[in-house]
Length: 196
Image (cartoon, rainbow, N blue to C red; front, side, top):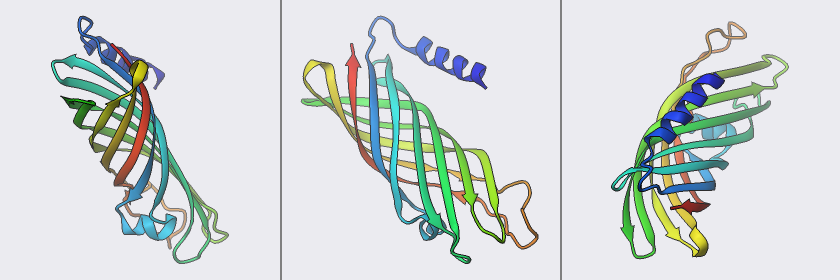
């Protein structure tokens, strides 16, 4: 697993244009608004999602991005009203197109979103813990606003579309497996530094 992460990082860095480098590194925070009704019924509408992102110029106005984000929320199961927790870790890889304007850059982007989902239901009848990987996609749009001393503010709106298959086995014969839909809208901001 570590070997794969190193290879991806080296490919990302190797694709950057060394002659015209423009690299943006930022810490981000957003509100994750779930789009799935089942998710909302258990965990509420959403909550805070936090992460980091690096964006690097490939050529002209085309940039590659890599990101990592984390979301965690407690809730109650619908039928038994027992405590449950969900944790979602996203790794985004994709491409952005930047359009300069007087205060910075407007951008749109599209990428893949490998996602790790972990759930824990603390029910006396059906205690259940599951951990599974899936893959979806992410669409991005936003503004990089230039600040003094190469700092930048990123105001963004993203949409992630991720469905993760049900567990291979169920804890009891009375449990019905379903696909987990962890898609949703992200509204947020990031603070970063531009290396150019």
